[in-house]
Image (cartoon, rainbow, N blue to C red; front, side, top):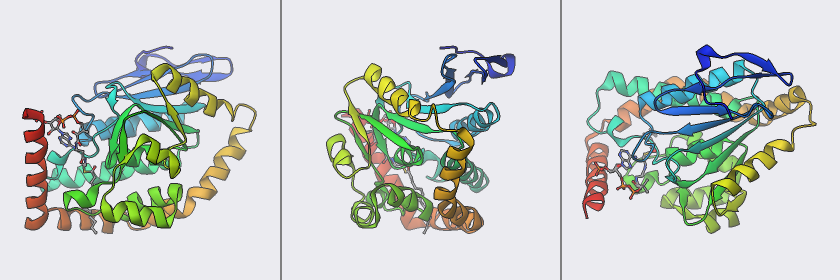
Length: 280
Ligand SMILES: CCCCC/C=C\C/C=C\C/C=C/C(=O)SCCNC(=O)CCNC(=O)[C@H](O)C(C)(C)COP(=O)(O)OP(=O)(O)OC[C@H]1O[C@@H](n2cnc3c(N)ncnc32)[C@H](O)[C@@H]1OP(=O)(O)O
């Protein structure tokens, strides 16, 4: 595995363009033999998704696409937490201009991840609430550690998961399960998530997780990449087009809804409860 600076390295090996990247809030390592890139989220303490980490994920996905990566494993450097979801500080008492940039960058990141041409696996090595769950659902396959939780818990915070969050879940577990899960803001334990098909495999540790993720990606070794990518594109087309068509309205909704006093109150109370918990 190479972990180097993308701007410094672009070589051809085994007929695959190899590259790797090191940045602040994410790091990328590319396996020289397989061409598979591992993208690590590394924003302590809980990989909450603020504007800066989203920008890095987004630009990394652009680089991976350009460099014709053969597959992606999306995971966390912080074992125990895959991602705590959107950084609530981006939504609580926000600066509206930054809030807009934040949401636009989240939209870009989702579009790139959801529509990437290469196969993608989330190695969910910790809890994955809300935005963390969204990232995992956007991948094609999910491998998860035992004793973790995953779900779109927005309603518990007094906020509403946007349509494209909902579609991302519906496309994995179906309408009925999604309605039930989202109206309750339900977080699923690993075994529960497996039983409803939200995740595909359960693993004991990182080594096993990497092996299972690699095994999934290996399934495509003999499938012509173009045929694979076009098929994925057709299957995901409607979901992506709906989001792209409505992204301006989605941004407007986020700002209008997110800045309402009642929503701010919910977010403030939720933040307090998180802080109290971490001090207890
Ligand atoms: C029709 C209208 C449509 C418009 C749409 C409008 C609004 C919707 C918009 C967006 C959807 C929202 C998506 C989201 O992702 S919201 C975020 C949801 N995330 C959560 O609920 C997770 C909260 N966190 C946890 O449950 C736990 O922290 C954890 C991830 C399980 C980890 O637990 P652990 O015990 O390991 O850590 P701590 O709880 O002690 O946390 C450490 C530290 O981090 C702070 N923190 C945790 N999560 C977040 C977060 N998401 N954002 C910001 N900060 C977070 C926590 O407060 C602690 O801070 P401290 O200062 O006390 O150290």
